[in-house]
Length: 258
Image (tube, rainbow, N blue to C red):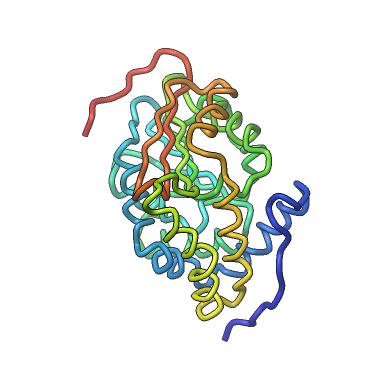
């Protein structure tokens, strides 16, 4: 039986960068056992469709390698490997408990020869320049205080013409959906978390981090500010989630649409 944790976390706006990094590491190490279940349950399984949308946008044209940053338990890595059988995948996360679950999943899926998970820091990726065709982060960038630093590292490790993808939840700008979404994030979700999670405060942090994430236009500007080009933003499920896709400057065959 999971040990219940009764505590609270400071708001995203009040916490220092060091406090936020410590909070995130603690939060994700404590919710790992039910992480996948709660992701699917609390998103009404839309997280599966959001990842699938991102994977369908991926183009592998040179190295046939994909980097999954803040890979968690590996859903994006596994789904990408299934969709693109020609690629190999590296996943990086700084929470050991998440990586362990991910390794068990790729073993069960018989993908251990194509997917490798390692512990690592998104701000100091353990890879050489120009290593991957695609670098992506799903639901991780809002937990990194130095977002520009993480984006620069993604830019560094992909080949010229390669893709950077950020899949992230934000507070919807859809006027008809805002009221419901606000009630869900701040009232319904915390109650569900108290019932199903050993650390319900983690999901209060989740709601807070979503409410405080930049608007899609603002985040596009952040990506462009570090040198990412041709940034497109795709609205998913009434703007609850956005996929931002940009490229690294330089010549590179993009590959045909699939």
